[in-house]
Length: 360
Image (cartoon, rainbow, N blue to C red; front, side, top):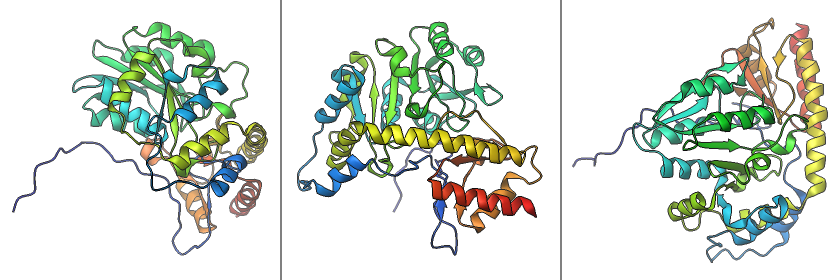
């Protein structure tokens, strides 16, 4: 008996951050950029009280959710496509645009799924150098060739936490050939409070060669339900709908997302909490010579090059005390960790343990 032949991909599979520590029943997970305040209360109330019809298929077109998105962001619902997280939108884009020998450009340090889905489609992935962990427009342009089909970037960027100013993002689109698709991932937009920043959705809503990505996994607290969306030219969205799985988003996810979009007070509260705590934690890390990025998203990249302890050393000490941060090894960032801003309880415990570690 012979096993049928299958494709072998020369890629490193995505490895999520830890969620458990051996021998510890209770841990504080600050490794996945999840919501510090949990799920949107309006979404939670709906999930608890709504009688879900689980023996029927969900709306394959996510019409109610697309309508809610179009109302909130003043955009055309026919240019919105929903997916099982924005991951699925990335996957569909790669299926639609890429073939073997095509080239994709991503920042040196960027969300791993951009490169993974691109490679699965057979494309070659080129990495544009960053300047002090910030995406560089000039370095991206240097990588452009006749084979370039797609440029992916998140703004603010994950895992670095840095961002391109609105004029820099506009400059990037202007310098790229018009037949190169620019994909701007707005995953952390709701946390941004910088005057020189603008979301991809605001800048490129009417563009013919830009796709915008959004997720409900971050500030809305719906990570477990797997729901996200993309926005772009109708011609591209129509083509994506042809290859989209028929019932790719479940009913609970669709209804919870609709409710979460209406939860303005929770979004405001979450963004305020994040800004206050990110700045507090930044000061704590600076005290221990742990260098961090300027506060932008709901996480901080921690650089230990000037610290008396290594990233690996501190990570182990924190895990022994039940706190999990994200290793940056899979992102190829040496001597660094990524910290998600947590609840007040979680953040205070982190500070307390750090003080004990650095007193020794």
